[in-house]
Length: 408
Image (cartoon, rainbow, N blue to C red; front, side, top):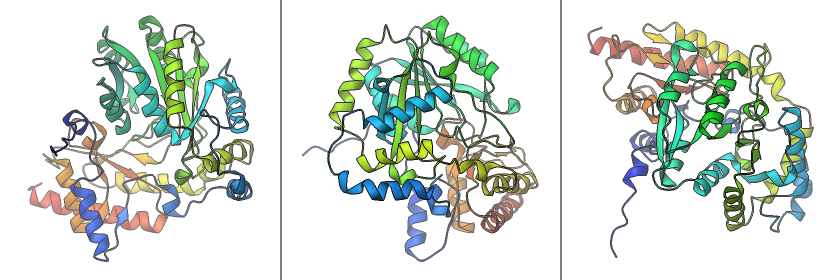
């Protein structure tokens, strides 16, 4: 049998989850070493549990959850997503416009698979959530990254987006609130993106999985609420706002101008049918989650656990020489910058490897998010305050040694 070659196109656009840093982390854990993991937003691992009413509702309904559902999902949770769209001022959404999936990730890949032909271009933010870059490449498309400006609160650079639109451009992806930067985009900026999509007949794919994880009284605007004449696919789910990553319960809403998208929607329906359906227990959690008490508000309010930990991580990182960070307005992450004059890093994956080996702290290097310069890393602020103090203290100690070795 001939060896099966890994797609070089895919390998070049997405950091490898089985790469040397994570391989080293697994080895260390197998040896009994304790690692502080700041690399992934796996919320339940940090003691942040889903609302009890979701858990109890799933348990009660589990005996009836063994069969397949409609390929788009059960009616009741899809109807609850329609109501949620109404709350977000997304107009004209019916149950037939809602697709349930095994997390939003499955639906993102499905949406790109159904759309892209070889050579089609998709505009993606840099830094990005690397699933998008990989899924575009896997679907035969070309990922084109537009710059998000760190000096402007990590907002997308509209001029850069304009400059990168070509006749092959089909989609612009908007991740708001943003992973990995924690940025939250104002309505005025979103309207500029909508206008670009309108002028160039682009589809907008809007990732809004963190739309309730907001700090300091900020309000989220769904970009789909700003235009009825642009086709928008909005992705959301229970993983983050409801601390239910493992339930794999997400949804996609198709809204706006659908008259010229009949073939595309037919493709979406075909792919939804091919995977039979999303897992039924996860579907059963959606209606209860969206209609119940929104406990995320307590976590992000002043004095709430997530707000406290964001403030603490920001304060501790900002005190380290040569480290700067934009304070997140939303989500669970921050994307600190390491001043290249003080930290002349050439390979940030090696930097992350050395941090792990020396201090037992696991982060993700910035180039893993398709940020070109090796001068950033992503950190999650989910650990409790004591662990955050410890983790950032270890990062500070490692950076002090790094400066010394570099003669800074």
